[in-house]
Length: 307
Image (cartoon, rainbow, N blue to C red):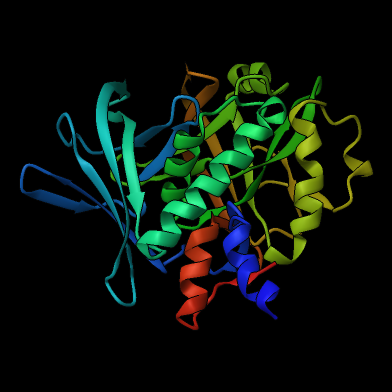
């Protein structure tokens, strides 16, 4: 019995939890704070790059704002990110601001376990560094997990041209509501990036949580283009405006016209405008959140549904 009691303290929590959440998620709010000002950015910030770790938002919040993540039900502060302004991007008649993550901390675990769990996770990441294709520093991964306190939706992105078709999962996505943009941050080694830059159109399928296994299986297409839409393990149908092959059992399908792209570190940051938006079904959407966030909610008897 004592081994069962010790086990949680000898093994790190999972870094990530796959959960079922109704979209848009409302379990955690994100707010940006600067110069005695603050703004709700729950639907207006996104990850623009993992290495370096960069946050994009429609707001210009000065040189060193703080991002705060809070439990929507209780108001409890769950974590913070300390940001440092990198640059702004002028797109059409508006602009986005890019902030490098300079530091962060979370409060989902009590102090002794918080530090111990981070040490265990960092040790495991360093041990497996050779298999970490992003070569991301463990401290940056800890900061990324704080950004995932806001559960991040998982989608399938479709690229469809006569010469190349492809479909692959992403969660580095999000609306930037004040500017009216929607962004995608894709590792620059993805085989479809040249096509996306050329045709400047993609379809984004919001996936039911029950289809996690199929969604994860399609991650192989980050490196290998799709050769036959009919060979997919799920049905497709054309999107409303451009006829891009989208997932027929998706909850929602949005078409994006890409208006800007640029490389940031190891990623290519795409910015688009939504040109069509179709709701095809109802249900909980597949999301990712930090493992310590799920542990926090479990202790309080309100865990998100894991899938």
